[in-house]
Length: 311
Image 1: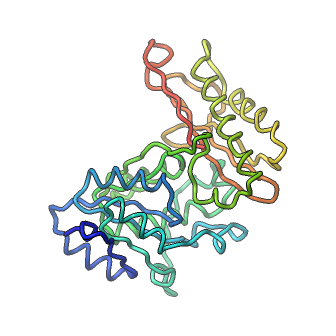
Image 2: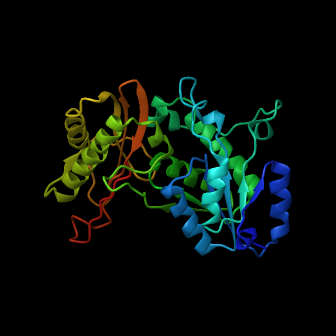
């Protein structure tokens, strides 16, 4: 059944084609799904490797979704290279690439959207109006077309991972959501398609984001007493302030891991938190996310602590 076994991944360009192929799998076939916007990097490929191990069929979507971009964001210049992406996914055993056009996914009569209540009030939602409505809508549509058994996402996009779990639970959608660790460059910067925008000078400065988040994570993990959200935010801001290329810190958020609701007081040692931020480097807008977590019982019960960043 898997076309990748012959050294190719079949490219499907319409919803009708993808739906027809999906019907041919049969009910006993497990389907792994990795939704992407293309411009693939090692982080995407890591998701595909895990999905390949865990499923009979592997589908990857490549679709730059206009509905999740704001009016002054980078939809028009977002990197697109389907030919190169197709070569990369073959090496990971991908069976089908679903790469529809915008007109096929959003017809002129399209009127229905998925609006995740409350997400616009969170730090990233305020910074990117309409973004999570666009993400929720396209993922719901993709789930309906591909009908995966499992869907794979990277921890780098912490808010998106929370949203995916809410979609599945609240709307009774079938796929299991699998969240995988962030893949990083050697200097700590998380791999991202948008890293291609950075000049050499900007790229050399970018790891300060990871450095600031690691400092907050270590402060949380090593604190002998309780530590507040405000203290963690200040640690991040102090380190970012040392980098002259950072034009503006739009926000530094410390939020609950399960809901992304802002923490106003003490970060509980047995619960941990997600630390996220958005900065502008000169005229460029960069959304760089990170998280800090402690396993249950880490500080109070003498158990194992775990801190991980996803900048």
